[in-house]
Length: 140
Image (tube, rainbow, N blue to C red; front, side, top):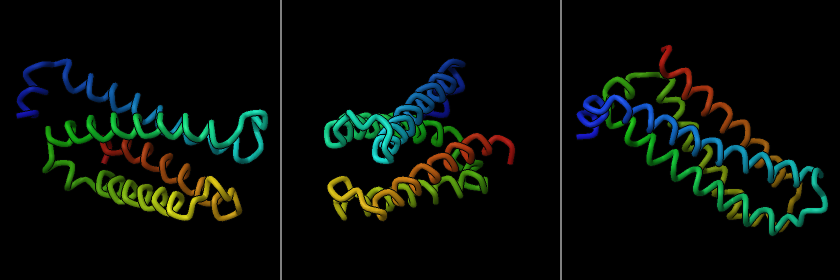
């Protein structure tokens, strides 16, 4: 059904792309903001309050990206499943989720130790790679 909608309304797919980019921007922007605070920038901002705000926006961004990404996937699942960049992007999304689960399971926001900081940097690297692969899908 979505494939038909996307092709019968020429603005539908670009609108999904815009929604996807807004979601990714909210997600990565707020992760980087929190990471900068944890690494010493903006020390006047209390980490717990900033984390509560930024992680809420991260969750909203992820939801926007997930919904729009799923709808875009529905327009051409066969082509995307055969695309190596898409496959690697999906694997990295799983890695990002696993990394986030580990970060929160060990209560890293309360500790802010070397392991917590390492997990934060790993998260940012994974999300940048996810973005790069998302763009690469069209060229592979």
